[in-house]
Image 1 (cartoon, rainbow, N blue to C red):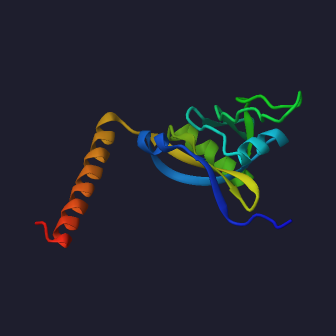
Image 2: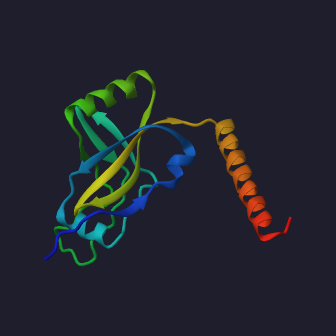
Length: 158
């Protein structure tokens, strides 16, 4: 049996990049039970309402929905239980300081397999205000319009 290599994305939190400005990102391991891993291998998970927080010197993830494994028995897991994230002590201490003093949040951006192990990309993020979101949408629309104009010019349809 060959060992898995590389990075295989299970699920991403697309709304997080829209609602938050990303300050810093961290890769964290996650403590799971067997049926959760089997459900993730089937590609079933949701980060829609997920968030991370620091409690008692440990980082926890709440709101991650991993549906029950269909072939599981009475040992199946609870879909929305809180899960412990595995980070280095220095990273946890840095996160404690930043979340308390600067008012930043911990938001999971993606869940993926890295060399066969489940990892979570967690971002230290600051919430965007409505005018920031509008500015980002205007920049994106302008960039798209420029690309369309370049494409038309390249085809000779000026």
